[in-house]
Amino acid sequence: MTIRRATTDDAAALGGLRWRRLTERSGCTAADRTAFLEQFSAWLTDHRSTHVPFLAEVGDDVVGMAWLMVADRVPAPTRRHRRSGDVQSVYVVPELRDGGIGAALLEAVLAEARQLGLEHVTVHSSERAVRFYQRVGFQHDQRWLRWEPE
Image (cartoon, rainbow, N blue to C red; front, side):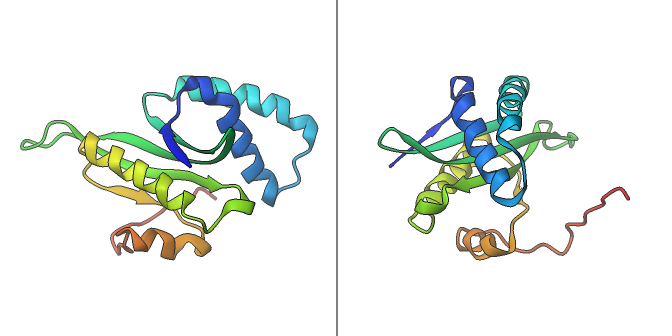
């Protein structure tokens, strides 16, 4: 298994994994896939300064991905360059789950967060994955509130 930082050259692989994840839970049709992959590739190019993707490969197969979204924060007198991160779209193909690929992807994401000097990193987790994130140090935070439009 290899974990590496992805580039815009990996747009098809990343888009394919994202499509697979989304279609596991929804009724998207194959006709939608081509348009999605084109839009995804453009999105990746437009967001490469704020979204850092990582890929997991086994042999020649792309089997997982994870993203670190990096956001600039309002400066403070003692720290003028503040940034935080958010783990997004961690996905491993179903047939290879629970084999350490997700943990290796998350390790790469958190290593990048440390290297970038992020103040904190958040994650919005599925119920199934909460323990996965807790094992590497994520904790529930009572100060975290969320608003959604009606």
